[in-house]
Length: 272
Image (tube, rainbow, N blue to C red; front, top):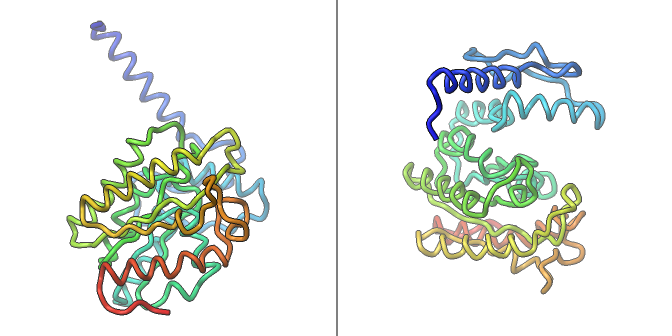
């Protein structure tokens, strides 16, 4: 159906007005004075949230002003580049990657760099992929993503969209001479923060696609799911604190699988 020009203009104006309104800080936003637009420093320092309520306010602020969370690793990336430290593998992911360095810090040495961000979905990772992966010039990238897409952290999506965003990250890496390692989504029977979701089937579907996509494109595939799942698709007892996020014992299962994939991808002996 064709719309009259004046009606189309009104619709466009309404959309622009709604977009502008979305940028108005919430009344309880303690960082309402943060810069917007093109500025020299888009990542002002904030004090660490003191409690859950303050964290919720910070999280709303972050999603509105830095949806891809470029600022999370901006200072670390600048320091890494200034030091001229060679980067072997960047680990791109969500909380499962973000927590890895906390529970297994010895893993991220000798050129292995953790760039996980808790709560992120694949479109958010794609937004920051240049800053947190490409610009660090690693030899390879380890991509493990999809849990939060299935949980609906940034809204509704489809498996095809999630797959497309992972494929785009892999294609960007290959275009820049970066080899690709794809990690299977670890098992989960439920999500504490999204109890209405039934993740077992979509996780299995995503992992089947990841395996096939890796094989078709010459990428390494790391099957964390097979090593950590019960026959029903849940996390094995003791490997997770909440059925989703690995414990130190869970990362102890994942570490040799990741290092073997790195060895297969880059050659040479993996670290113990």
